[in-house]
Length: 423
Image 1 (cartoon, rainbow, N blue to C red):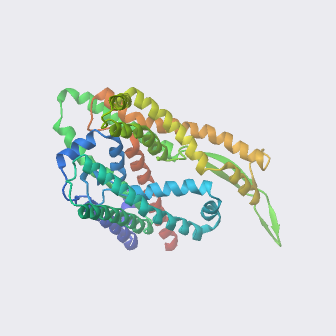
Image 2 (cartoon, one colour):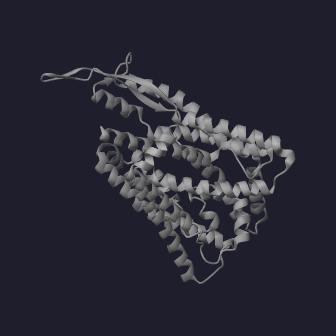
Image 3 (cartoon, rainbow, N blue to C red):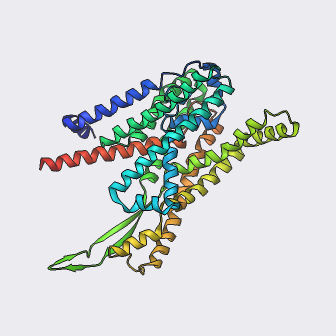
């Protein structure tokens, strides 16, 4: 490992790329400390402590939302636009053809449309968020021109972060959007550790030790499942072209255990927290039965057992839904048949598609249960240990592990490429 690190810094081009990426991450963290004018810090802190939805949004803003900085939206609008475009690619044939069948040029156009869609998503999110915070008296009520200027600033901040992410991705040492989120999560660790030390109790030493041990086990499990895959053997028939023989080789079709990544957790949280937002709005009305029903709904959703059970079930359902949208066994069967490939012992065509679906459903079940457990793990840990400043699992852990693994693979590929150049 240390030899690889030394080798990285010996290669001038790779070293410059890494320093360039680190400098852009430093720019992002600097901008995350510049707040929107007129922020009430105490109200802001209490608001985030009592709202789980904005806690999730804070993760995807890289921690910038909790400071109400000029990049408070983070890369959230770009992520939302990416999800919408992926779903539309399964509904609208022209977008699907652009994404799947037009090669690199088609993917570039697809990414360009995603960037265009990110602008109205950022404007909508920024306006709604600033209005909500102004109604909560977290932001001072100023004149309309000042408010509109703040909306433009936060939208420009989100687009600027999207641009930074693109610059980082071009250096081929990690995905830029993921690294920005990763930097925000890591930046919060010293704050959480400080809060834990301030509330330190010597009688809880066994609890802290157990927490560390379970954390290591959970991280190892996340790495194992994230990297896990089911390999389906694929054979290619021999083809004669002139005096040459092509094919006749064996390969495999990898089915990842965690096909959907962190997307099902995001969808499930959005569905679960939507009733809470509706309850907050309805509780402000003067109608007795309406405000009473809203308070009852809020109390029901605040019950940790009910919330955790619904969370777990929705994550499993959305894992299957997202996998069905993004992974098409019928199309894979057609592509294999066109390339002269077949699964040994399985008839090409519909039989191959049904076989892939059968294997996929079994593999996705393991990934769905894994995601569900990881999602509710912070709730379980806080319930059993009483430690609220540190949590195991959740969206943040999945993002951190995935980004580290992806970045390590890209850096390793850069080293291998330069080793070949040396030969």
